[in-house]
Image 1 (cartoon, helix red, strand yellow):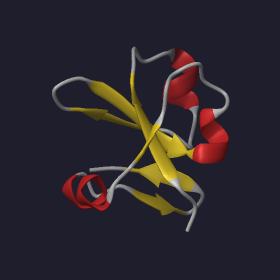
Image 2 (cartoon, one colour):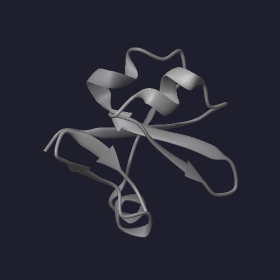
Image 3 (cartoon, helix red, strand yellow):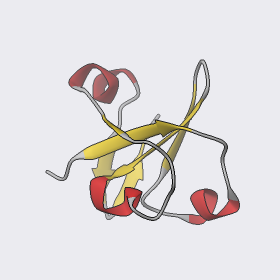
Image 4 (cartoon, rainbow, N blue to C red):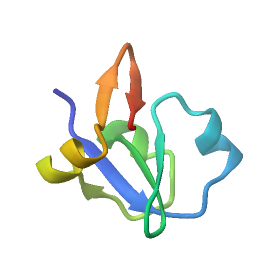
Length: 68
């Protein structure tokens, strides 16, 4: 499984149109993407941990990053 990363950020139109980005709104706005795809953005990314994966149902599905 590919490593997923997240960053707190301001959402851009590029992020909204990127199928490899999931946007999560909690105490802030976060994007979740693959390590490879994160190179397209100037944000500081961190590894998504198992708790975060479970809490937000973050997953790769059919070539997309999804979260509930």
